[in-house]
Length: 219
Image (cartoon, rainbow, N blue to C red; front, side):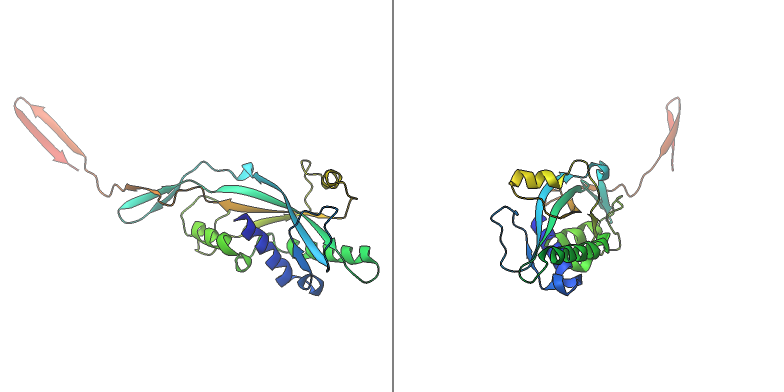
């Protein structure tokens, strides 16, 4: 699913972006000192994966049919954070070219607080559509049956993530960068869910006893 998230972000940038983005190479490699693209590139390096505990839910998902109910665990919400850098090749004023590319990335991704379903790729699209068809108590699932959008945050400050420390750990000079975080829903259920019969009728019986006589009344 995470690889499909990377493909989804690539689709957003190359489909909804300006000309410079649509013609740029989209890379997911670690930007070490040996990283040397042969054409202008946007690098999205996945550097952090963690559960979004603020979206954690312990409430089960219940889907009812005519005679039975299906109980599932709620999905795990996972934040995937990418370090986005621009790498211009050729021409003059390379630094300004890279700044232009980053500004276009920022503009495109900030335009979408959630990734539109039409951009979702592979298992991410299938899983989102499955979650969307269930009866859930979650603000991130669209009950209409359409794939659930994936929330995006761009260039949001986070004390636990310091890009400068990342560059230092790689032993290369600091570069201008953006941090992009997408939150996906990870299905934790077994392929065969737990099902239980529904109570579709009930009766209440009251009675009195007088000696050897028992009288009953059913409601």
